[in-house]
Image (cartoon, rainbow over all chains, first blue to last red; front, side, top):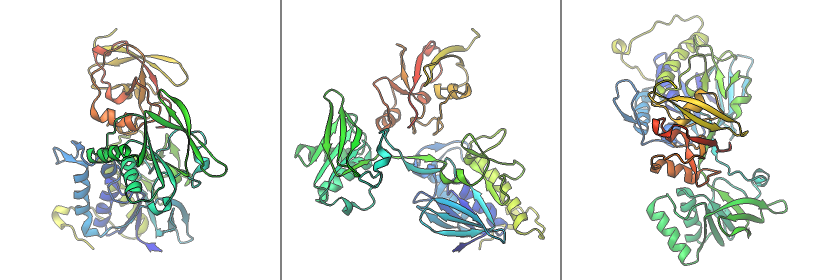
Length: 336
Length: 109
């Protein structure tokens, strides 16, 4: 069991900066994030996009802002559980919370700070009616272990880098017995080198490239046996396959946190703006995941919210201790 | 019609047409106008052409500026895409698009 003072759910910019403000109050933090790296959507979706409304930075790339935040919070030695999403929350008799991830990792703390942004990133699923009934029965959204596809027929759908790269990988390493790549258009917008490799493999007959087409149906008795492919001009046809792997990137959803007994409004958690506490004492919500009258979904507002929330968290953890606001200019940053 | 206002016609997913007045001097786009009228447009990425939740179909012969690479990239990966698909967040409100007709694409992106 991992024990800390504050469990922060979400390692985006707001979660990260909250570590700093908590650290000034000598509170330790442990962050949980479903993505494999800190930064949330800034590193996952738009690392190279400039942000112009971070005070003191006329412009800063999203990825660079995360690097700077990681540097800023380093003195407070934050710990991370990455690549796992917070699944359940339980309260103990001594007023502590236990947050368990989808992989079973347990974290215990008196305070939970939800900085979950837009939510947990999950694969984007194409609109195929019976898709979900074949999940883990031949439909996978992520290729975890390529060896799983040894000597299998695989249909990959998508036009981005992961669709291209996995198609190439499964062919070049002699893994799949047959690889078909289905893409809605004739051109690909992935890396030029990957596109060229796919074109070459298609030319030599090693990849079955099906363009201007979409997978619109799945069939099979208890597992995937074939997919229905709809071609723009030639109509529908069936293709035998053992696996169907749609690779259309990730999208965020609020996920299990929505079931934690918190007051939800328009897919966001309602908070009291005095301290960004939720309706469950000891659980706070900061950043894009919360909502209140006048809410602005801005990183800089999230920084403010986290700062206020840790003051309240401190009072809850140490009801007998007096806390006086200290300026970093006077006291410096005294890490752990 | 007041100065600096145009009308945009949005057909929602139930087929109902909404005639919306939109200001040309507020640096707004179609996604933002829809949201300000509380039409069911999510605009999850905030207008960066990175989520396709504001996808719509252009149903008038309005001349629009050429699509950017980032819009084309996103539409390449999106679902329910047709030849007349556009991302609402990439259509700026301007005098040139007065009277535009757009139909909201299905949810699921």
